[in-house]
Image (cartoon, helix red, strand yellow):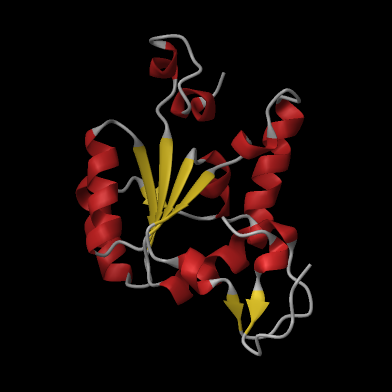
Length: 165
């Protein structure tokens, strides 16, 4: 079994010792930096991205093992969104295809894996779930972007008239 199963408590005791889980952090400010330090202290491999290269470089000295690029996203067990909401939405839009491919590849490798545990688990600390329901304008959105608490039919645009389905 892989690290995703160990995150959900389904592996036998000691089985996750074979592989260190990996967390990806989007934004290394107070919240993201705290998550990065906490996960690193627990033995997780930490990958991160930040708009400030100096912040990322400083974090790489003791905490962050590498940049959260497309190859690293596919190896993540967990991704923590900890930047400003607009930056997180932009990151999700830019990496929706990578997240979707990672989930598809995980399901192909293990067809018994439920869709909800395939690929990295993405959590929001930045209020993205409050930001996404009010989309400036959209004809269609990729289904991968709409994987959050609201059903697609509950998403409304800024004109408060158009419901996305």
